[in-house]
Length: 116
Image 1: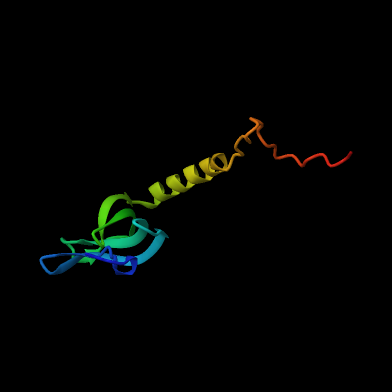
Image 2: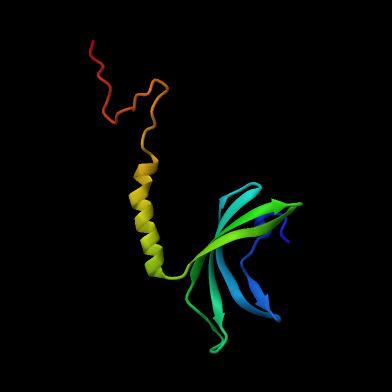
């Protein structure tokens, strides 16, 4: 078990054979709940070659000093990655919408009138 984020890897061996190899890793969030993104390839056992890269977004929880995988999502194709990107681009502006102030008024994007 990995005790630090640096030690976490997405490599996986089956009976001494590397069947999933990590190409790159990015730490998205740190702490007792960490989120990492991995670029990886899986071995095609029939041909003995690695398949095209995929992306995994993995959530880890630190428990008793070691990180354990809690959940993951795999992006298995370029089409799916582009669809996810499109949704992010559509939704992100909605995430940054101004919130009402304590008086119940919603701030406007328009500049304040500074004339007296």
